[in-house]
Length: 636
Image (tube, rainbow, N blue to C red; front, side, top):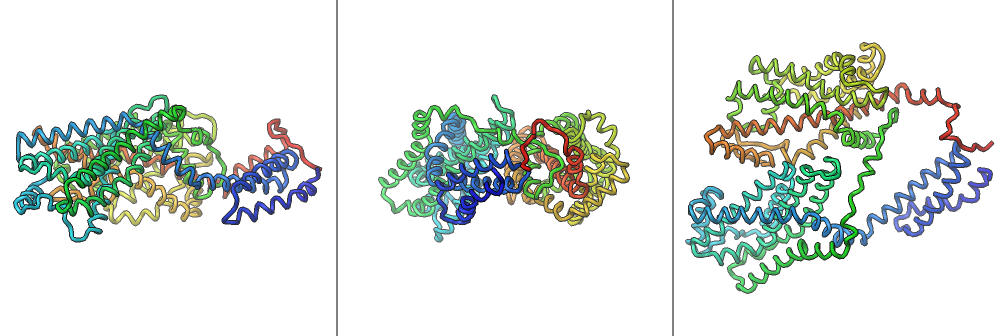
């Protein structure tokens, strides 16, 4: 069939789709029918008109149909109901052992609080503070033992309590990323406080009064904390026990499972805030039977949604339990050189590349760079222990100053700075080596370092000197100049010209791509900030004199635990807590630099193709050569 006749016979159908696609009330069934017709037309065009514009047009049209059909499928109410009634209960069932572990652990911690208070009636002061206990005593003497729950502005109380409860629940979940240790610490803290608080009221002869007042909202609130702990243990176990998946895939699956459980908890956390603000607030005027009913109904609801119903769904759908998440979407990603990427594609490909080739470039970093870095920072700490005996206001800033040595307070800092410039260059070289092997013939890392390391180091030294010779607050504005050096390193690593030419081309490419480089740099930093925020919030502030965290994060909580344990054995708690902080910061730093380097390599590939059309020239050289895999019928 002639191309003109093919277009004439199908033009009306294609125009129909164009109108349908622009309509806000398009029929998904009609879109599905069009999808079948257009894919058939596309297949015919690919066979007979491969080098014609009509084939490109139909390909774009088919993509629009696919997006339209799947958009309606994703947004359908039926899928939402299925997610809530089948998918979420199954995830809870799969995590049942972790949830049971959290419950048992929490009960043990509550028992510890009860026993400790029975042995030492002043124990609640140790876990809840003197001011809170004194306030409770005053309320008891005034005949209002639960006066702490009274607030004139109930709406403000609801917002404040709900926000705090959501924060505590999600903090308990994210703490599980520390190999489940952080979750257990938070469960321990809350469990001991609960046991001590309840038994303290028993000593005052007010156990039933406190029980009926606290558990009106506590049935939802405490249950949510325990379940959040179970979700955190689920996430942490995915990293510790990967099973048949790779460790990263198992971790990704377990975190996804834990997040689903956390989202299922949010309505109950909001309900707990509502009950505490509007019902517990009036506990003294409510009849006892209503309090017992609310508590029983709340616990019954939690047992139904998180125990009975998940078991029912699992028993009814045994075939779904054996289904695993599909990781093939990521595994199908292939590195394509010489491709001009949009900003979104650049960020997406950087993240995919980082995930898939993580073990290749991080193997050297874990085995060589990390041990050297740890020895370096620990040696400085023990040579100058006075610097680690304080809690700093901007903790991460001060600790990075000690780690890298850019404070230059002593001769050792100069040595540390020199060694760190080498380590930074080695980290970046490990990523550049992976890119080199994907683009060209296989080169060993030793050969790559022998050929390229010196020039990589010299290029890396320039921005390091600019950033670290000045105090951090004055060097921050210099980050806007960073994109001017960004593409020099991949240029000297990938290009085969003389190193002076490569450096000149690198600066030229950097200047041409300044704004997209700056935007990419900001986006990568934002992604890192989002992922590290639950662990060590970059805006976390500390009271330098009292050691009080103004914005506590998981690292603060674990550091406090280390401080208490080491102080118990007569050691300097703050010193060892700071050692822990430095260790976490250095691990995050070593994982962040490769991601930035990956994005830089993709950005360089963009600019190289725009300026030189290197891959296109390669295609021109091969144009006309017979390829038995790409033969097509071309119409005369």
